[in-house]
Image 1 (cartoon, rainbow, N blue to C red):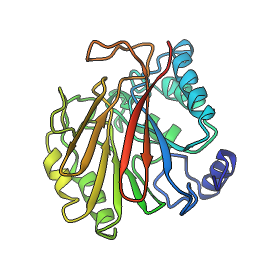
Image 2: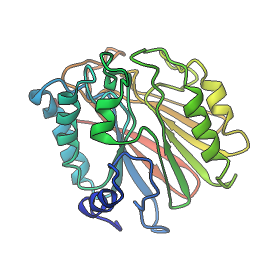
Image 3: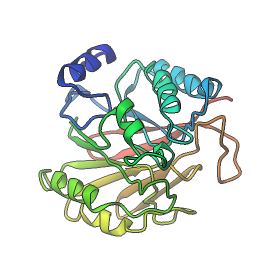
Image 4: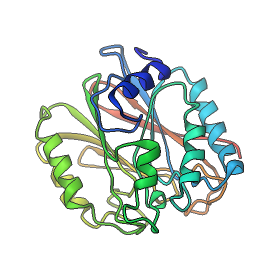
Length: 266
């Protein structure tokens, strides 16, 4: 690992950015073998007590020396309140390696003109990109207010298109957002999912990892791995009637990605 989390945050602080901001930052050492990242979603923090399960997940991730980076796939809060997002950040800041965040619809405060103002205050930008070990990792904002069923905005589509246009067509890409893109998701598939995925036409998209639907769904289409994951929340249940809570690991080699679900005891 080329950076400690403290060094990483110091670097971003010097740029006036947060750990989830859109920035060119170095997270992984190049050419050091398989890369493992963790992804956690739908923690739905409401109060201090509800950070307990999140803290246990953080302990799990910290204990795994293979994990270089964590992605938080939205719905950190319950109602987009600043206090909820702050509590979530305090729990996540215990991660010993860097993490990046994308917003979920429960991170939107419907009482504010800019619904993501509280989120941006705590976490910075709503999209980011990182290149490492031959891969490109991209996170973006799939939210449409507080809606569960969404259409990705023209603004976010333009951001993705611009970024993809600069990527070598052979370089593998991993994409992260809150709302599902799984072709056979049980519910909540992004309405313009095919249009968004079409932006990667001719490129080497290999992974689309999302949350929102609280359940483990893993499928592959045309060489692309699509996932959703059980929630890691003590305030919400899973949508698939399962009880296991936890997070997902992704293992990247030079061309492919494999995944597994890790249970965290409530």
